[in-house]
Image (tube, rainbow, N blue to C red; front, side):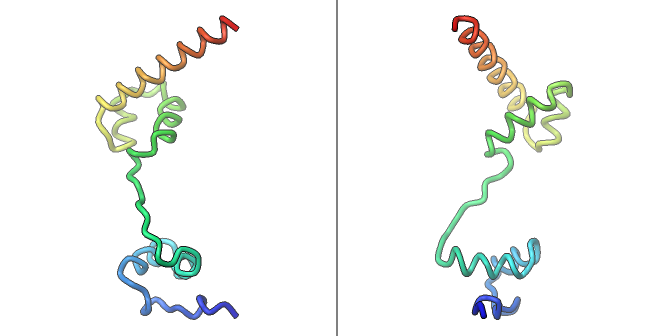
Length: 99
């Protein structure tokens, strides 16, 4: 028998109760079992650069204002990322044509 399965909701810390509320007691038990003593940071959506770029590329037909609203960030940030994405794509086209 796995000793960690005996952990009950009332045994959890405030942070682990939050996780149990969101994901279930089993997830909290597995975190204690596999990640005990570890501290980690969960970034905001705005910090997931790869996701943001992919989302913007997949939704280029939408206005930047709408994308910004969906991602809960500023329109200025979205416009900058669109510009960077287009610059990278242009450089890749040049490299491909040279090859």
